[in-house]
Amino acid sequence: MKYLFRLIILCSLLISPALFAVIVNFPTLEDVQQRVDNISTDELKAALEKNPKLLLIDVRTAKEIQTINGTIDALNNKNIPRGWLEFRIKDIAPDKSTPIVVYCGTNQRSPFAADTLTKMGYHNVKNYANGFFAWKKAGLPVKMIDKAPDSMLYSKPQKVAEGVYSAIGETEPPSYINSEHNNNLSFIISDKGVLVVNAGGSYLLAKALHEEIKKITDKAIKYVVLENGQGHAMLGSNYWKEQGVPIIAHKDAAEEIKKHGEVILERMQKRQKDKALGTQLVMPDKTFEDEKFDIQLGKEKIQLLNLGPAHSPGDIMVWLPERSIIITGDMAFHQRLLPIFEDTNTKAWLETWEKFATLNAKTIIPGHGEPTTMEEVTKYTKDYLVYMRKEVKKIIDEGGDLQDAYKVDQSAYAHLPAYDLLYKRNAGQIFREMEFEE
Image 1 (tube, rainbow, N blue to C red):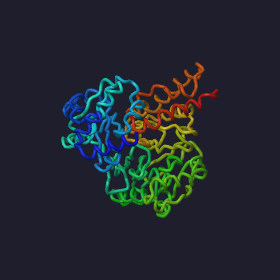
Image 2: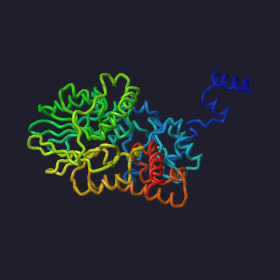
Image 3: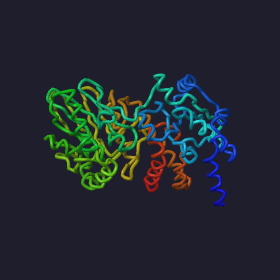
Image 4: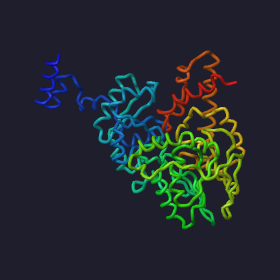
């Protein structure tokens, strides 16, 4: 057998690729292109307009997408490299009638991907034959992998309202590519100074945010508020302390930093390598434990709210009552699937949500994603939690187990970033929480 294998390798070096493909029964690109269902740029644009949740699969590698800095901007655009397609497709498209469009850069790999899916039994597969470069050249929507390549920030601050800004983070998990900027770093400018919400995920990221703030205002930073004790909220704190700025957090968030901070720092250092330079773990300067902590910053009345347990210990929101603007932190999600951790209490989160809803906020700046409305965050936070708890309760009542929980249909949320990473884990965590719930 080994001699036959060597003979095949030798033949591959001596004959043309096309002839070799015929001899070993491999399909050529020309063969595959003729039998797959191809669509053009105009046809893909029309299909997305008709069905915004159409499943697109970019079969290029993550490194290619990063280098080129872009992929098609669509609600349900997934990156599955060609070599992983057979292994991962069933996780995002368990129904083989799912409409799917595959594409690459120049129509070299996507025909093979479309052909493979068809052979696997998917019967509504099309190949975008023009490819990503044609899409980009046509000026159609492109999602940038780094919106601010000249900065550590994933994107630079955008104005949400007068004196209120947010640097919107990547909606994917933290990585070297996004420099730990995968949450929103917001700030409020008053006549007497600036309040920053979240210290940032590292010393250098905090410094990059400060540089952008100084381009917008010459007012001094008076406070930095941590929305919770997670790394991307607090690891940049030592930069702000160097600037003489006090750090404020809820006491439960401070406890989380004390218990888990060193481990969180070590994990970040492994991910960020040189980008972690200068980052040291420090504790908040001031903590509070009441439901409300008031700050009067010049003419701006600001309230830090901890309305009860939610996503993680010590979650707070920053509320501007006179303008009905709220920076929710991880209380509310809408542009990524919310994560459920071991210390997340979904039952209590829903109870806390009712208090949050009574604020009737007009503008929501969530912990992740673009500023939005109460209707949107309700759909993707409260409604998701209610649905998942209802489905898991059915499983428990019928004597089901953890494996049944993993099978809960979450396809209505499959278009959200981080879905593939989180949906099974979320189901498992909710099952464990509810299994002995009274």
